[in-house]
Length: 113
Length: 113
Image: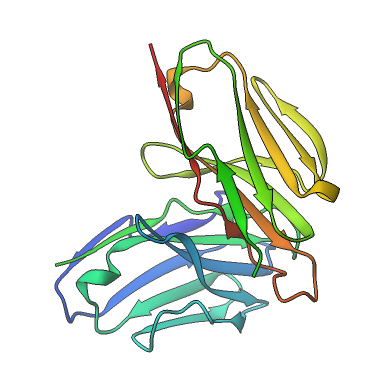
């Protein structure tokens, strides 16, 4: 397996624009996680899915953020409208089951200007 | 939620030196992982170690779950070991902290020639 695949690797957008980040988990993994990394807050969990169902979205900062997982091999994280404070590296990760090893994608570096 | 503390926050070593990084956590865990974030930002899995001891080349890790800590040992350090080392834990199921990794703030390691 190629591991967790995220796209794009880098995104630069203007404030107010919609941004969509994409993730393909490892095949056979039932859990998918979205994390955000910033200098101020470190790595923080935004939302996670189990079998394509959102389980905990308490980390989503506000209504401008939304995430979907339409099938087992694809998830999106959308920010609309984007703001400069959303600039961060966004990671997607997947695990086979709870308590098992998590594997991370290479991340998407988002810059909102 | 579960708290994760790492020490030291920063570490500078001369190439060839050994080091020990520590991770303390506040509750029982089902999963503990060590990651290395390289200078390109990629999160690389080092160990999946909820308990016991593992070794991989110059790196080894020990988790004493009953005392709620884990140690990462780096021997004969090399400049390529530079980066940030993260400990991440997942709490035991049904405690509200299951199925999501909580990250420590990391240890930033710089290995010099």
